[in-house]
Length: 474
Image 1 (tube, rainbow, N blue to C red):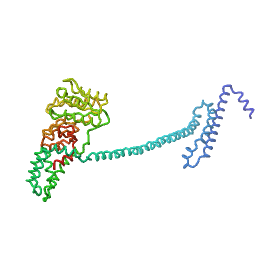
Image 2 (image 1 turned 60 degrees about the vertical axis):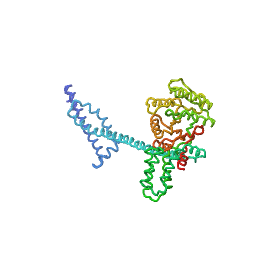
Image 3 (image 1 turned 45 degrees about the vertical axis):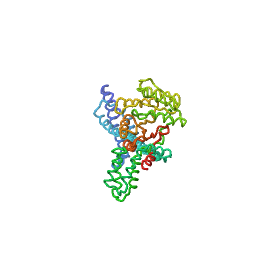
């Protein structure tokens, strides 16, 4: 049988033989492909779990499935030979990509899982930034304690200022001479008004008002004193004259608080030269006061220089020259008509170069109503600050006690131009208007630093408020 088939095949033309051989090969490859597909399906059916666990193993064991995909890749070149019969070879090609699709999806599911922990890392860093926020308020707590330590320092200085020494016998004697005229008229009328009186009647208040006015205390200050007495005795009726007198004395001491709290002596800072600037109208005894204070400082062993800042009147500089010669101290003078500020600036520089302890500056006497002259005081004050930082150390207004209430007006005008640290009240022994001291303290809150009770150098005395009140009511 085989020999007959071979003889038949050999008898066929060559073209037919070739086509027949090609057909046989195609049939063989198709049968082989079908067998391979059935074989792979059996293998895939063996490890597959029930339907409930299909999703789990696919994501958990991607590595074990990878070699399964490599086996069909080796069989693919065998299927390339029958490219001529495209319809028959299309069936296995359509099935192969189905197996490849889930394999490509598995690595995609793994990529977002790797990205999720990266997003969690900055979340852990956020609370680290919050920790220093809690430490910041801890650093602020000691700052709030610093001002608490400073408060008692301010209280200590305030407690020391009102302490005033009891008046010496010399101060009492000088005050008696200075207030002789004021005290004789004031106390005589006060004793007569209070004699035999009980309580504080309207009639007695009118008499007290008249007596206080006569001492030139001032309208505002008198009103304040009377209102204080009314408030104290509003519900009392059996008070005798001595009690009313003591109450009046207490109220006056209260009004003298600026002088009570003032330093015992003029400012004496560590910086040299210490500069005192004297201001006032003509004829109040300004130049004489400068000469007396210079003498007192020299007696304490201090070096003093005088500065003739009044360049408008040659007589003023000549008068200061006399005091310089009397005290044996240097004087700095400018040319007549020279700018006063330039003269005083030169004096400050010269005093510093010569290591002088104190520089006493005289300024031109001027009416407090002359605006241009008052403005020049601002310039002098400003120039002294340029010559030495913080200067002048004292600005002292010299007023004449005999002018009475006009002294208060002068103080108001001068204090508006330059800050006043104190007032020197001259010629107190020649007037009965010593009550102006009370008015100056009450209305201007400026302390009285010195009072003049005579012509001698020692008659210029530091003002003692307790000695003043004690002498006034004797």
